[in-house]
Image 1 (cartoon, rainbow, N blue to C red):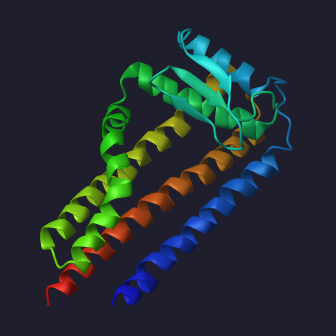
Image 2 (image 1 turned 45 degrees about the vertical axis):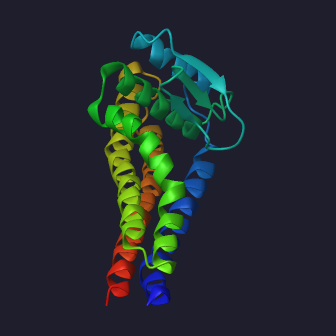
Length: 225
């Protein structure tokens, strides 16, 4: 039954995740070739958006890799993988991360909740599965249920991430338009396509976590028969 659950639940989720990764990479690379009419680099655009919101204390740094952009609320640092790029794609991603900085500054509840859940999710992500299968092999039900409980924390984290990311993308489009950094409708649509593709990866992660939790529950029920 374990292989059946894996085939029925996890394989489709993996396929969806691969598709989401393909979408974000292909969409980003497409618009990474399109230079923004503003002529600003991603770092310049992010700085302008942050200063416009009064977030002068938020620093901007380069980070290695591609699409490794993120905002660190602990150090108030916005890290960009393509800070010197003047492409529509890079400006959209930079604005998205600036959106996270705005969420942090305004005490956006889902972000606060997600940040609080990070230790639990990190702990559960590496402990839940080994704990569950150790309990299964040793026929120790409390261990199995502990694994399920820890993995429920992981599922919660992926679910609370969705409104955080969707809101950051919404803010990105809004502040790019209001600041005048991007005016042309075609560029705004390009930004939305890039951010929508990126959002799909978070949807895929949530789907994977939910289906994995269902699989664990079904395995646990099967072991009790």
